[in-house]
Length: 595
Ligand code: F6R
Image (cartoon, rainbow, N blue to C red):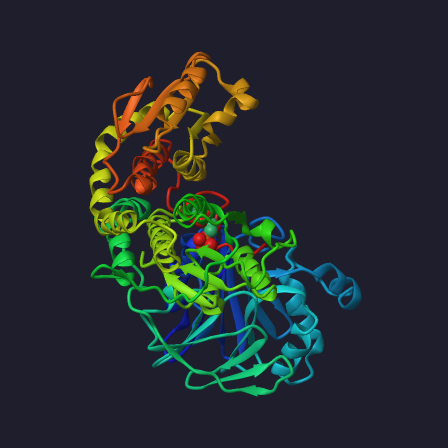
C-alpha cells in the first residue's frame, strides 16, 4: 500500500526522494512526508494530500539539505489522512516511515508506552517510541529489540541522529528493496529506483539492513550477520511516461495488444507451449486472487474446466487464507497477481505451501514476493502498470491462463488435438483481435455521454459473459464512482431485479458461448421493467436498445479478451466526463499490501 523511498548518497536527498515518491504515488496518495539528516539533526516535512502539496511546502524550507533521507506516501489505515498522521514519525533521536500494519500496537502502547506523548493516531508511532525507549547508544540493537515485539506486517526505513550516515531498514511481510550503484537507494517498489540503481538486494522477512552509501550489511532479528546476493534489474520495469495520452489508464488500454503478444511470445515458440511447470494431473485446481486478478481467475476456471475436465475452485484470497482450504499436494494452487505483493494473495500462497500444495504464480512484477515464493511462475509481460485500475495486466493474465490450460491439456491429454491446435492458433492471433476491438473508441465516447449522470448500473452475462461483467462492473465503479453490480444474468430475477426502474442502465454481455437465447430472455425481463439495455455482442441479433459490436475473438473461448475492451474504454470515458481522478481513484492504491 504505502510507498517507502530512501536515499544515501552524495547529492541532496530531497529531489531524489520527491522523484521517488512521485513514482510510488500510485501505491497510496492521501498524504506524504520526508525526513533528512542535516548536521546531525533530523528535519522533516509532512503534508496531507498529494506529493505536489509536499513539494510546495518544501519550497519554503531551506534547511532540508542532507544527503541522506527517507520518504513516504500514505494510504491511511490507522487514523485519517492528516498532517499529523502522515509519516515520518519521530521520537527522540529517531524518525521512521512504515508500510504495513502493526497489529498489536494497542497492547504495546498500554504495556510500554503509557507515558509517551503520541502525536498521531497511527500504529506506526508505537514503533518509533519503542525504538527510542530501547535505545541506550546502539541503534541497531534498539531496532532489533523493537521488531521482535511487533506483530503484523512491516517494512520500515529508520534514521537516527547519532548515526547520521546510515539508513536502517527492517522487513517482515511487506516488500522492501535496496538499490546499489553510485549511491544507495531504498524503495518498496522497483519502479522508484530502477533508473538510479545498477543492482538490487531484496530484503527477506526477518531481516534488518544497515544501509550506508557505499556498503550494506544485513542481519537477522537476533543480529546475526547474513550474506545476501544481489540481483540484476529485469528489463522493462523502468518508469514509463504518459506520452501522447492524457492518462496512464488510456495508454495502458492501448498497450494491451503488445502486453498480450509479449506474454504469449515468451511461452509459445513455433507450435509448442513451453511452460516451466511439472505438475502431474491433479484432482482439483485452486485459483486464488483479489479484485481484477480474481476476475481473470473466473475466466480461467471456464477455460480450465472445458479443457481439463477437472474441478477448478476460484477463491478470493482474503477468504481462502482463513477458510481452512482443502488444498494438499494433489491440488495445485494458482495465485494470480499483477503486483505480486498483494498481502492477501501472498498470505494465501503461504497457506497453500503450508498445506503442501504445489504453487504456481501468475505475476507481472518479477522481483515481487509472490514471484519469488511460488514454486513455479508464469510471468505476464504487461510491463509497468501505473494506473490504479488494471487493464493491460488483466489482459495479460487472461492470456497466461489460456496458455496454462492449453499446456496442461496437451500434457495430460485431456482434449482433442484439433481443438488444442485451433486454440494455439487463436493465441497467436489474440493480440490482433484485441487491437481490432480497440477500434470502438469513438462509439464508446458517445455511449459514455449517456452514462455521465447515471448513479447505478448493472452488468449481466452468462458463462464467459459473466466473467466479463464482473470485471467491467469493477472498472466502472472504481474509477467513475457509479454504483454498479455484476450479475449472472439468470440470477438477477432472484432479488436484484427489484432495483430496475424505468431508465436503469443494464449492460448485457452476450458472449459467443451458445447461451444467446437465454441472454435474450434475461434482456427481455429487465427491459419489461423499463431498463435501458446496452448489449456487448459480436452479432446484431439482440433486443437491446444499443449494440456495442465487438471485434471477433480468435476463438469463441477467448471472447473475454475482446469483450472487455469496449467496457474498459466505457469506464474510462465515463470517469473522464464525470471529472474523476482516473489514474488515482479516491480511497484506492495500486498495490494492496495490507490485509
Ligand atoms: C482493479 C484492480 C485491483 C487489483 C487487485 C489485485 O482495477 O487493479 O482489483 O486487481 O487489487 O492486485 P494484484 O493483481 O496486484 O494482486
